[in-house]
Image: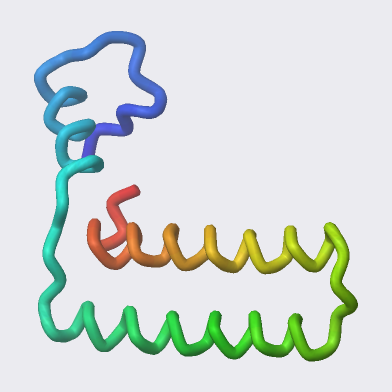
Length: 83
C-alpha cells in the first residue's frame, strides 16, 4: 500500500492510492454489522456526556470528537484498515 500522505510526487501508485482513499466503498454485511456496533457504542457515549457533563465548550468538543471518531471508524471499515 502506498502511503500518499508522505509522498513527494504524484506517481501512478500515489495517484491510485489517493483515488482509492476518496472513492465510495459500499459495505458488505460484516462491515455493516461492525459499523452498527461502533455507532451504538458512540451513541451511548454521547448520551452519557449529555446526561453527566454540563453544557460548555468542553462538552461540545467531546461530542464533536466522538462524531469524528465515527467518521474515522467508518473509514477504517470502508478501507479495511489501509489508512
